[in-house]
Length: 112
Image (cartoon, rainbow, N blue to C red; front, side):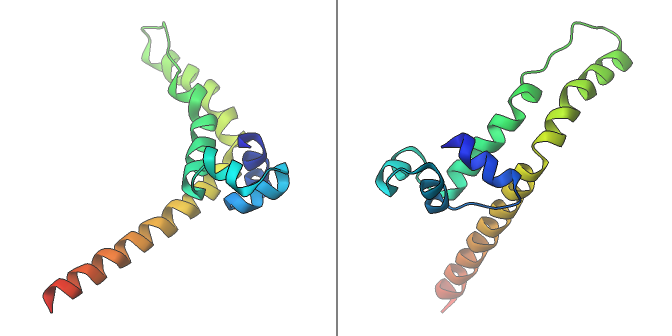
């Protein structure tokens, strides 16, 4: 399911869990067992894309060489997963907005 979610994200979509179940051909119950929310699947896709970058290390003591090594490692992954990262940004922005709205509503309710 993760590969399908990434493929959908790479095609400029921000798939819901239902979108992924349709593309994979599994039941919604099965899908929700493995990825309970859109945010969870997006998080897994971002982890997959960032994995090699986060695991990067260099044996060099030279700062310029280390920066060059990091860029050689990270830029291909960032380019390859650019659409996935944009989809993640959209989901996180929506979730953040919703959380802020809930907090505002709770504060207003408490102030009454």
